[in-house]
Image: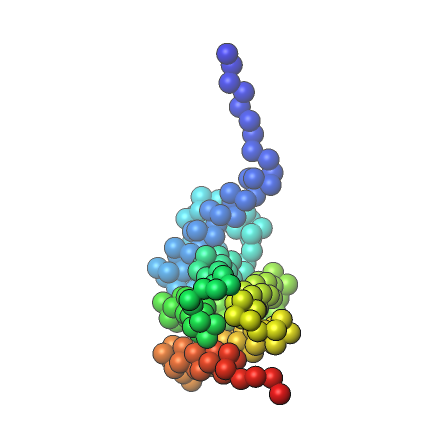
Length: 196
């Protein structure tokens, strides 16, 4: 019998191109840094045209995609109800993978943070990451018996504290060890204080 050749859909082609471009950008950013990488290099590495790269995003947007994918892959799920993991421990460790990622390449981390703070629509992942983090942290606190409204507020405090630490890291006024220690203290505060 004849095998019918099935063409991938446009959506599938776009997804594949985006993946190739993002993977190429990630390799080049690691090897050459953000400023040492050009869109032409990314196109050559991915085996696509410059136009195809730009259809995925400019260099700053590509860096955001690379970091967003790496962060999403490291997000730990909240502990189940009755877990032996303490809420403070989970809240404190929740951000360790993020900090480790940032510590891995400070130049890229700073460029990523600058991209996020510009607030461009194509860099809207910060809102998605914030929502995901707040939901995970809220679930962890609720699973320890904390009321939902207080848990949500505690999660918001944790995320705001984490973002504040990123600002300090990007400015070079702190280091990753200090940031992790302050995040742990914030987690202890959130989980140990009762609402008045």
